[in-house]
Structures are given as C-alpha cells and as structure tokens.
Length: 256
Image 1 (cartoon, rainbow, N blue to C red):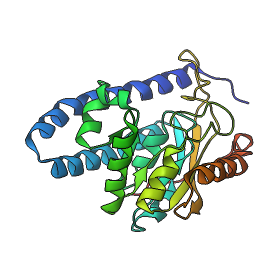
Image 2 (cartoon, rainbow, N blue to C red):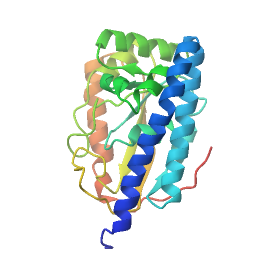
Image 3 (cartoon, one colour):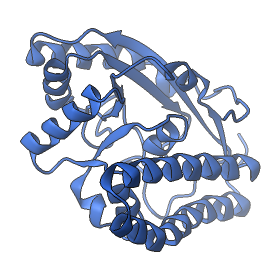
Image 4 (cartoon, rainbow, N blue to C red):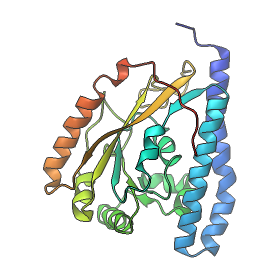
C-alpha cells in the first residue's frame, strides 16, 4: 500500500480550506438576498446556489485527485415525487454528496449550523429545517413534502457513532407517517474514515478517497413509526455490514 505523502496532506487540507472559503464568500450575498427576497424566491435561489456550489466543489476535489465519486444512482431520483431521502451518515461530506445532485430538496440539519459562519447564512436562505424543536421540525418537513419536494434527513441525527450505523432516531418514522410518503434509503460508502467521528484533526488520509452513494430499499409510508424505525435500523445494518470491506469503489465522471 502506498504510504501517505506530503501531497496527500496538502490536498486534504486545501480541500477543507476551500470549502470554508466558498461558504464565507457566499455569506454576504446570502444575507443580502435573504433581506430583499420574499421567502419562496429566497429559498429557490438558496437551494440552487448550494447545489451548484457543492457540484463545483466535488468537481474540484476530483480534478486535483483528492477524491473519486460515484453518485450516478442519485440521478434516478429526479421526477419521482416527494419522499424522504434517508442516508447513513459516515462523514461530514455526506450532505454535500447528496445535495450536489438533487434539485430543490428540503434538508433537516443541526440547529447549531444555522449560526455557523461558513454554512449558516446559506442554509437560512435555502430554508433548511433546524432540528432543535421537534414539533416545528415535523410541521415544516411535512409541509415541504406536501408541496412535492424531497426531504433529506439523516435518520441517525449525527455522524455514525458505530459501525456500520449508529442508532436510528424515531423522527424519520413520524414524518413519513404524517406526510404519507415513502422513505428512500441511501447507502453511502467510502474507503476512508476521513471526516468521520473516528477521524482526528491531525490525521492525514491516504488519497484519493473513494465515495459511492447507492440507492437502497424504498419503504412504503409506515403505519407505526416505532416498528418502522426498528425495521429501518435492521435494514441499514444488513445492507452496510460489509461496506467497510469494499475499498475499491468505481469512479464515475461528473454529470449535471
């Protein structure tokens, strides 16, 4: 196996710095547009810019040889109507992978990120849903789904705390039951622990890192949220049980 090099370190931390610069650069325009535009227009602009920005960011990582991505399965979700997109959450880049390919999805995110100097202004402009108030979160999520949009929701609520997946939280079942929409699982795989809960800030990953997002099972709208969460948990554990043992993930060219 090739040893980790100084070039790996340079590319890794340049990639992180570039993400921060992109977010900070978007903050002043996002704040201005949020003050000037009506909410519906602001949301549309915010989500379009996030999609384009994330798409460009992944293209930069690919071009400099830091990462390979296979996200083609996500293209098959276009035009399929409202549903909850429920990925496992191995690393901090997961939302970037999914949002870079989808048009106008809603997204549930940690409430603290709305005050983050890099992500906060853009997330508020896009109308993303904070997770600090359960009733408010469910109401907003259901409203987005009833308007015909997809909802990105990580069922673990945070990055995976164990292999292959952390505990599944009940809110995904509550929202799916109330909105009467299916839950499409997404299986995110990588050959690196970079940006996972196990990753330390001083650790340098071996590059290129390979990421793949596969479409998993699609569950019908549940009638019992608690039973559904148990079924979802069991499915993720079965589907992802061997993911860490598959380091050779195929690369794929970017697609608009």
